[in-house]
Image (cartoon, rainbow, N blue to C red; front, side):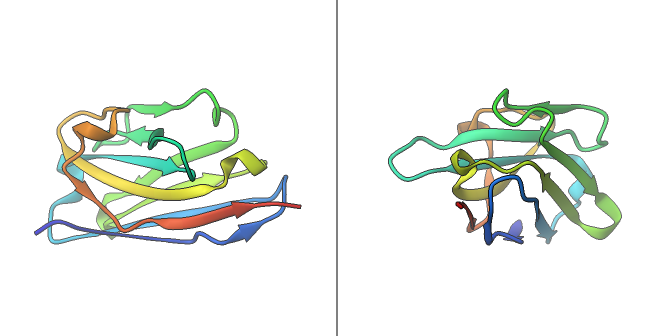
Length: 123
């Protein structure tokens, strides 16, 4: 079955950068839209960025526009989230998720999820 594994989460100072990776296996990545989501303690899971299977369409939450960049390399089975100008409010567990067809910013529309990776931003 579909398997997604996130990596790259760790501690960063405000203004710093991190790059998250989502490694996909056991399915043909190009047929799936991928979303990055995050969930902070006591908050609902929210969509951060999404990308279509062919990379032609992307979505960013207002809170990360201009700071985060989503990209993918279907040949490598990987999707990335470059996070720059990090803020303390970016602290959360970050998840990648896959769904066949077009992207959606709603987590309930995704079929497959990774286990998450923790990002902590603090001075």
